[in-house]
Image 1 (cartoon, rainbow, N blue to C red):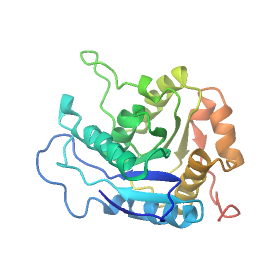
Image 2 (cartoon, rainbow, N blue to C red):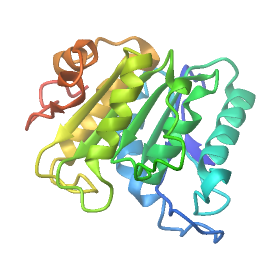
Image 3 (cartoon, rainbow, N blue to C red):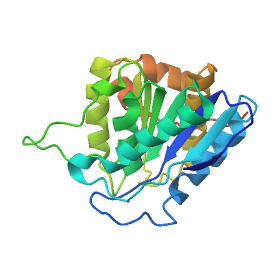
Length: 237
């Protein structure tokens, strides 16, 4: 786990890169690149508030079935944050398989929020239990997914958000129309939304109106909220 932060830390974001479904190999040195832009934006916007950002480096790159290795590594990283900084709120922010890890590890008592960008989730299987959501009770949760994602099915993240909303009203999901898995086409808007969410959940800043509306709206409206082009241009801190 590596990261940067001010000397007086008031909140922490743990950045969880993507991974693979099954593998015991060490993660690629390039794996953390998927969360670098997000980390830079959050570090910049949260510097004055006392935000520290850390990238989690997994022990191996695979989820590996019931071992849920990436989620275990995320939980270990939260424990390290508690050891380093004490009683500060933590947001788990993951992309791809890291999004699944963030959602699964969100039940740790130090975690108050989860941000999942294009999360990889397993296909529905009647022979296997569904992805759990009860651990998200009491947390604020934001899921963001491109409608043209070629790697992770956006419909699966909608279904998970729908189930999570039944046990936790503080769940919302934004759809980035025409964007793919890496959300590059509307990266500026996605980063602005992520920053607005983090500053709100960790430091009590007012949410932008679209985010506030999405959290308050009943399903499916608050779970299929379109991310408007140009979001955040007037919100830049």
